Length: 309
Image 1 (cartoon, helix red, strand yellow):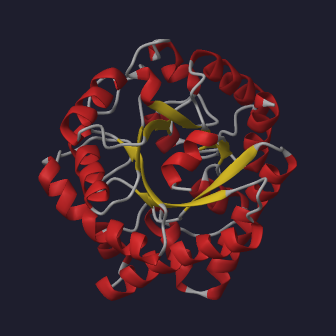
Image 2: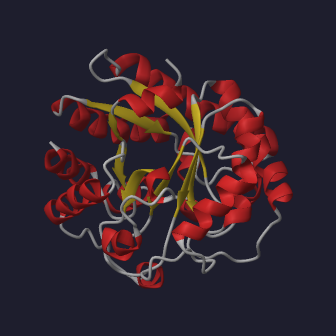
């Protein structure tokens, strides 16, 4: 069964706010908000294992869901490696080790009733909240290809580009993954007005990526925003909206700027978030992948699973 067909066949849960959980709940230091830092020693790897197994246990409690193991590689491309002081060989090894850890979790926990998929997570070259200086799609393809190749060689079954702020970078990632024969998922983030940080609407962004990549993405997602920020922008029955296959929402209704300035983590209300997901599924019945982003933990994902039944 291919990753693409597997995702189309059932609903999947995935994890929540990896970095915010590790920092605020587990008391770990993540330089530059980069979880790849934890792959450098056994203590860090053990912390990541505990983190993922909390979510796997949630998925086990709710029959009918599979689980997507999203690797802790959101900030482990070349520029972020430089900021973290990782040499290129050390960065390659960390990316591969992250995928191996996901594969080990799959080998231990996957069941016929709860299939798992290993996803190689790719983050933006720059800030995840700000579009910043835009690359050309060809530049983005060349930049992200190295990390994508490493993760696929290590055993990733699909590539997920998370918190995309603009379309040229998304196009480049989609092309790089497709050229290497891998299913690819593009997840955009939006501001409180439902627009990407670049100013585009979701409709415009999905249409542009599909047109420039021959509809390469298996599906699209929305992450790092609360459902209140984007639910009104989703047009029921519109072909572009039908391309959205997953949600990883924030716990908080705050804007990205407010979250950046906040001294404490806004955990929102897990039950209300679960109800918001149920309302989203009523609008977009093709949704298949459900997880969280900033401020969410395993209790939020459990509330989502419970709300979806």
